[in-house]
Image (tube, rainbow, N blue to C red; front, side, top):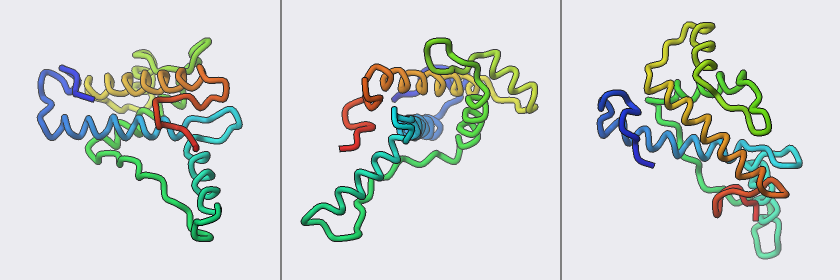
Length: 158
């Protein structure tokens, strides 16, 4: 995922920031996919953990040993505040009609006015980008009868 021109504002996004942004978007996608609730109410991460426990109990496996899932990418320290802001704003976002809720510019403005946080323009654009990512992931899963559809290898339990 490459940095879009202007995401960090007027070309201010250097190589370090571009790398942090790429890492952040990978972190966000993993978090949003793993936090997605399936039709039974459990998250993808919970399904993956249960599957690992079941696999560990199969014949030929060491008893009581649970295989670890691949580590999820960490959130770059430089952008933790944007993730926190996204979660806060998304928690109060209006319904999306027939689709998932999405964050809009008025949502960011209302949140900013109420909290007195002042995101930079590139941070606000990134929050909207995260909201779009969340909506895309939710739509992918909604297209599947069991709610588990996703990109190949993502969100599958077995």
